[in-house]
Structures are given as C-alpha cells and as structure tokens.
Image 1: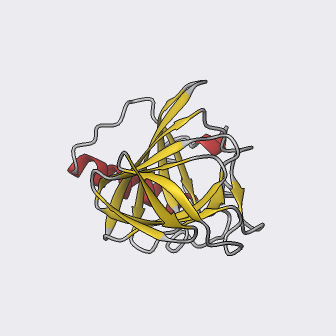
Image 2: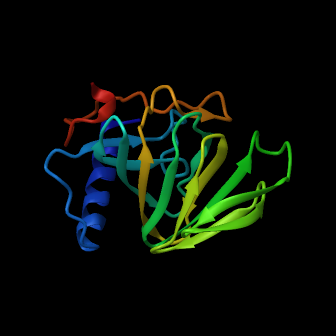
Image 3: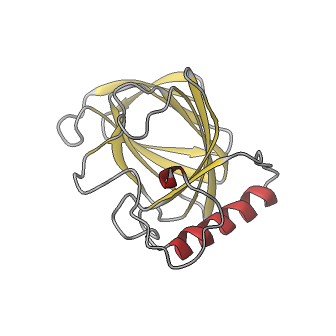
Length: 188
C-alpha cells in the first residue's frame, strides 16, 4: 500500500470525523490497512485507537461504501461494533463460514435476537452488535461513508485476528512514496 494512499485516507477520515463532531485525542494511534490485498478501495479500513488498556480497547473506524473488512474472528476478544454515523451491514457466522446455518443468539442493540449463521444484519446510526469470541464476521458500509465504533476487551491485532483468506494480513506492507502524515501502529 502506498504511503500517499494512506495519507489521503487519513485526510478523508479526519474531515469526515470532524464534520460529524468527532474530536480525536492528540495522541490517537492511527492504522490504515488494505489487509495486504493491495485493493484499498474494495478491501480497506481506517482505524484510530482511542484507548488501549490491558482490560479494554476503544476504536473509531472509517470506511467508504464498498470497502469490506474481510471475514475474520477473534479467539479472545469480545467486541461491540457500533454504527456512529451512516449505516453498515455485517455478516455473522457461528464457526467457519459456509459450514453450517445453525441458529445463534446475537445481541443486537442490547437485546438478544436469533439469527441464522450466515445472516447479514443491517445496522443504522446508534445501533450495535455484540460479537463474542469465535463468531466470524465481515462488515461494510451501506452508505457513502460510515463511522464505526468498537468497544472491546483487550485488543491484540497481531495474535487475535483469524482471517478465512490465508492471503490476508492485519497490517499492510507500505511503499514509501511520500512523507507520512502520522505514525501508524504498523510503523512501530
């Protein structure tokens, strides 16, 4: 992924955050990824770690329509994915996607609902889904732009992201074609 693409994504996300009343802390930790696939327009995400403690983590994410966060699960992390602005869809599977269509209880905006494994849940601003360890999920905005929040238990992006596609990596390899606007988590 080119640094110029990363810089542009940070500028676009910052403008959208600000236009929607989100003020970021001066020490926010940025992450921009194409998941190692080289196609940020179709498979990309801008993340900002607002708090990262031993017990919990809070992130703010920005994505544009058609940018998919690929199918993955976490072995340890429990998370709430919250639509802050816009709308999004999330596909949820119990176990390996495509292997079963069992009914599962998923907490959506604070209330348990039965869905079939593989269902797509649509969420609008103010709505959330609670994902427990082992639930595979992928998500994408259904509006032109979307701010997505994440509140979770301890976060370990290196060891607790399990993608279905073996070609996917959590961090992108960066081609330095211009100076960075900010230091990314993957720069350390």
